[in-house]
Image (cartoon, rainbow over all chains, first blue to last red):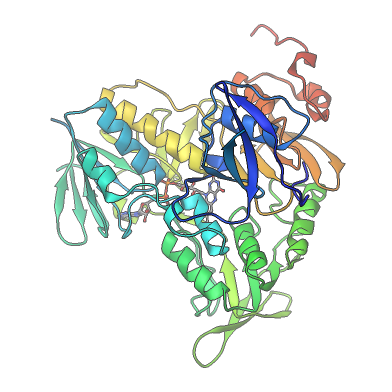
Length: 82
Length: 412
Ligand SMILES: Cc1cc2nc3c(=O)[nH]c(=O)nc-3n(C[C@H](O)[C@H](O)[C@H](O)COP(=O)(O)OP(=O)(O)OC[C@H]3O[C@@H](n4cnc5c(N)ncnc54)[C@H](O)[C@@H]3O)c2cc1C
């Protein structure tokens, strides 16, 4: 999984019937909710990896991703409704 | 009404406080911390030091959080001793706080390098938000750095230098970064990541002493070979000393950490411990072990609280920990206990992809994944199931791991 590409990554996952995508962001607003990947439970982690790598499908239910929050991984990614 | 006292408001102490309030709504709960701020996100302070993340999102609980739950929070309060006969906690201000049940959740403090001038200005250790603020402020002005400590916390300093434009030398004692968990092939990927951000790994080195100017500011690190590395910024991360001094005489069994069973109970009645400070009985390994990670500390706090409130052995701690490095273009994840094991299997897949699995008595006990983290859940599952699979390591080294390809587990 190479995160260095410069184009924005927009890959969708189905989460509890709400599609969310992870969009790379350059900066974070002071009022943002931010989590590090090591705070995510196993299923949510799996969903994040899958959303960021083109070739994996994602278990839909049981992830704790909240639209609007920022996940710190190899870049900062905002969770957005697709 | 039961009186619970928790020493430490890190993630383990705070998660215990939250759980205690849920499990025992009528109880009295006191949380004591020597820090001047309530729970914050210790694993994000490095992002602040890198200059990437503002302060506000790093805070987790404001003081209202404690008020809403009727939890008494004492900031800036250092616990000096615990009287286990009188069941009282003593603070630096002479206050005596009685407890029925006590949780020790005081973590550790970075070890200072035992060399000349290691307390000079410009030499940083990294544990608290205050440390992060000071590192950020200094790093924004510094030009030349030295990093000491070839482990998971040392690499955060490398990332700070990279992000803040400090050209740095990373002085390592052995021939590679985190040599207890990585072979040369895996470590080289990490070295390349460092070089790409302007940090040069230096092997078979370390620090013999620091040089300072007349104002006491660090000017150079000299390694045991006599090589001199000029610097105005130093990050030292050679290990943690557990915060147990105040427990001297309390009778808690210790062995480089506080010994607890799988219920987080110490050797003294009504005293529990959680988080980095514990040497806990790991039910998956079948022996005492240590974890220095956020998820594990949070879960230990929760499990301790469940057992404290139940006043019996209600739930055991069973956890596969993981720890990520997110500073480079490729991800890194270590899970379980990657530094122990009697057998290892590893493979390199590309310039940025590598995997190593540690086995003990044929079972997966930990590992490190670089670049491709996709097998993490299968490998963790095998750890939880304690299946003997070392003789089928080939299946686990396939690019895509399919557990159905393993021979069915033998009846025990
Ligand atoms: C820079 C950095 C980066 C990290 N990155 C990661 C990561 O990416 N992933 C990961 O999983 N983990 C990471 N960790 C480790 C993780 O933060 C710890 O494992 C976790 O925070 C431990 O929590 P704890 O509650 O056990 O201890 P702590 O968070 O250390 O809390 C203990 C508290 O007790 C207080 N205390 C100590 N002695 C006393 C006393 N006598 N009286 C009163 N209060 C006292 C301390 O001041 C402290 O506030 C990182 C740690 C650091 C420092």
